[in-house]
Image (cartoon, rainbow, N blue to C red):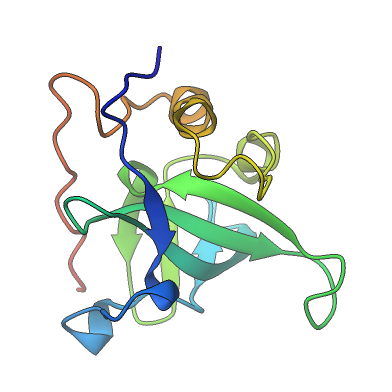
Length: 139
């Protein structure tokens, strides 16, 4: 159940901040599932407005020139590796495709975030005992 202290998430591109090291900015990299299948591209990084940490990848897939494109949120907790061109996650493409739908009217609400965390099997970042994942450094 969501708590009242759940933070607001904002797109990194909507604030006057950036990733400190350009090599760690994973926007526009392909997201691959645990079997190496393509899920989409990291369109945006969703940042916790209190701690300024990335909480979700906003991944875009399908469509043409942005038309008909679908978006899904993937918790950073699912990332297993990052290289110069790809972000790898611990889920299958089919599982990611079944995640709670992205709805611009819900993205600022803790119940939506909680449903995404639950779907992927992770504790929400505002939950008791949550530990921010270590960054999967480049090889």
